[in-house]
Amino acid sequence: MTRSGFAAALLASVAMAPANADERAAVEAQIEALQARRARARVTAAAAVERGSKPRSWKLPGTNTSMQLGGYAKLDIIYDLNASSGDTLGITGLPIDGSADGNRQGNFRIHARQSRLWIKTWTPTDWGGMATVIEADFFGGGGNQLVSNSNSFRIRKAYGRLGPVLAGQDFSTFYLGPAVGPTIDFNGPSGQVFIRQALIRYTHSFGGGTSLDIAVENPETGFVISPGGLAVAGALGPSLDSLPDIVIKLSHRFSKGYVALAGLFRRLNVNDGGAAGLSSSTFGWGVHFGGVLRFNNKRTRIGGTVVGGEGLGRYVIQGRTSAILNGTSSVGQSLSAVSSIAGQIWIEHRWTDTIRTTVIYGRAFTDQAAANTTGVGGKTGLGALVQDVQSVHANMLWNPTPKVEIGLEYMYGFNGVINSANATAHRIQIGFKYSF
Image (tube, rainbow, N blue to C red; front, side, top):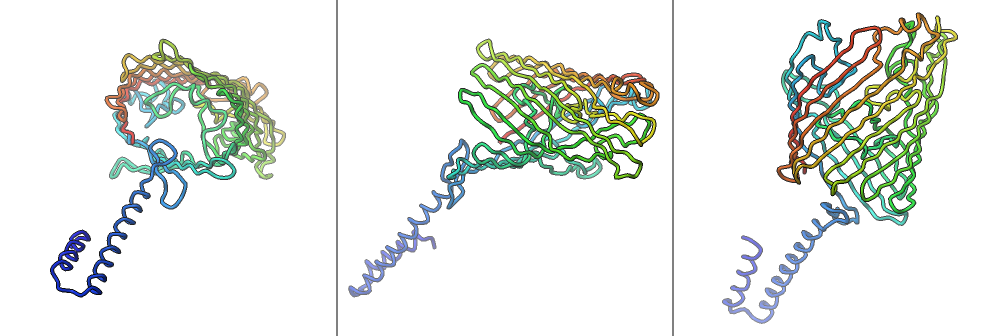
């Protein structure tokens, strides 16, 4: 029997039974207690879904913390007209044109690895507002295409922010997100700065949309190449990082767009612990400028970035080499930072409120040959190393409803390789994205 039915039965019994005054009073007290409990239950239920301080958020019961849950499910359908470059357009990994792998043309692939989940919270404190963000997707390792097609759930962001200080993993302060063109491809255009890593960042707002960021970020020399084969290429080489990367950024947001200038300073170091007498270090630096402008009644946007420096390495998509070791033996080798310049430019136009088109050109040039002017064999000793990477993305995106995005994209990739034939890619990709 429900509580309301029980209360009605009690009332009926009171009306029908020839009870004395004490008995009647006891029954009425029970009814009042039951009604009070029902009222408290309604209040508790209402409190459990109390509106939070941010849009689409709610208060955690018994706290002043607002929580928001979101993300999306995304399906990508990919067809490579020539050799496959994987689940993203990995141009630096393309097989050389005319090689056996390069002749294996035409590959069809469907995956949902970009699907994403995030949790955000906001809490007022005596020190200012506190916020947390945890975000993850499925572009981790593992999985196969034989049974479950599963891939590992991996961390993208995990940080807390109290007042002006952020600590945790986030996009590098050297990254200029609003200035990068939108793509269906997960990697995006060549030549962009793109990296997430652990950091501590202080932000000072000058008001009017202008802010200054100063950050210390996780270092990783990585991707050191030895012409004589004396060091392992890649992030697992004999690197030993003794100083954090330092980044400073000045940015300004205004009604028609965004502009930012960032500087990077880092120390590159290799040390094999005396195994072969390999010990050398140098410094790297970079300057990154970019922005986006809206015009034509905000129906058209033009944006782009340009970055240059020495030892940029992993900060630039598909321009990853940080340094080269020069010398004829491990003892006495010197580490030379590789100079590079990269960038991307794009234009987006909204044909209607739900349909838009974007065209993006990106390029990254890494001067690996010039960095080895005193090395073994000069330029010929470098072998087949990537030097010039270019990409074109042309897409059309349609939002039939605000939470659904369907898109078609054509991609072209060019991989200019030292002392070898080049590599090219042509890809068509369709994406279905459902946000919540």
